Image (cartoon, rainbow, N blue to C red):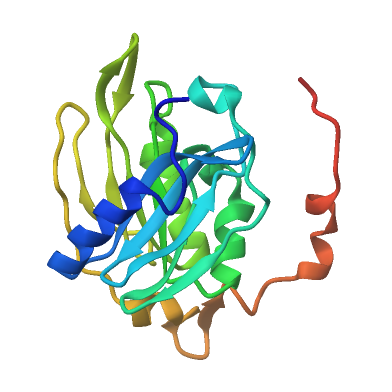
Length: 223
């Protein structure tokens, strides 16, 4: 396919040059080719170059994903100067285990590049907020706007802090740049004290992993 490339490759080299010049980190989605396999991928690039990549694990029967290979089943978390960053892509966020695994691996920030089309408003407005709150991690979700081949995309990019508060949100009609300030300490502190000694929650320590075995059992599709 003409729009696929290797990682590292031409795009990551250009991104690295920009990141060095500006002193920033970016997460960008692209189509990756690796030998005879093709992936929906995201890369994390910083001032020192390519930090890491993620290959989309959950592939819906939609668009280009119908023709790609699923990722290798991992959700890596990368340590950077601005915090520990994990990546998932679009449909991945519908599976709460994705964000939970990255939280357990120490993620402070989850990047979520998406292609939400019309019909996915509930995901854009509610699901990503739930993922941030239930894991007490920051989430930066980025969607496109406009139309392509008859499909309209809904925008609604947002920055959500670890308390589930939306710090910034884009509209759905035109491209925008949004920004927000995130506290790493807020994401790292999982113990929440609403009233000391009376109302305290900890989404990490209060877990009961021994009860969740059903989640990992392989079942046949009902479709």
